[in-house]
Length: 156
View 1 (cartoon, helix red, strand yellow):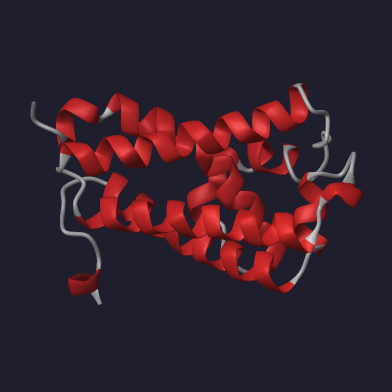
View 2: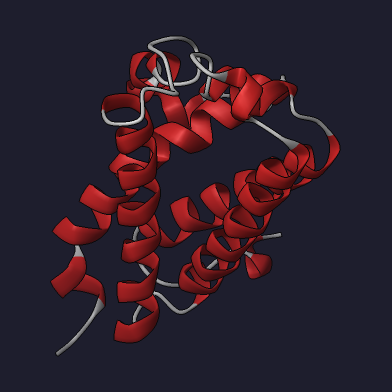
C-alpha cells in the first residue's frame, strides 16, 4: 500500500493526494446531482443548473488532476506553482460568490469546513456532504500550506 503513496518527504504530498481524491468524488456528484451544489449557492439555488454543475465538475476534475500530479511531483516548480494557483482560483471563486455575487450563504456549504478545520485530516469519509465540505475547506488551508513550504519542496 505504501508504494502507491507519494514518496516525497512531509505530509503535503499526501495531503494533495487526499484533496485530489475528494475532488474526484465532487466531480462525480456534480455530474449526477444538483442537490449538494445547491447547498453552496444557497442564496440563489435556482442559478445552479445542470450546465453550471457540469462546468463546475470539469473545473473540479482539472484541479484534481493537477493536485494528484503535484502529490507525486511536488518538487517540480511548475507543477507546484500551478497547483497553488488552483487553490487561489477556487478560493477566489467561493469568496466572490459569497461577498460580491451573494449566491453563497453562511450555511453548511461555507461554515462547516471552517468549524472542522482542526480535525479535517481525521474526518472519515462517511457521508457525501462531509466529503464535499472537507474539500472546500482545504482550498485556503492548502494554499497557505503550500506557500509556507515552497522553498522546502521547490529549489530555485
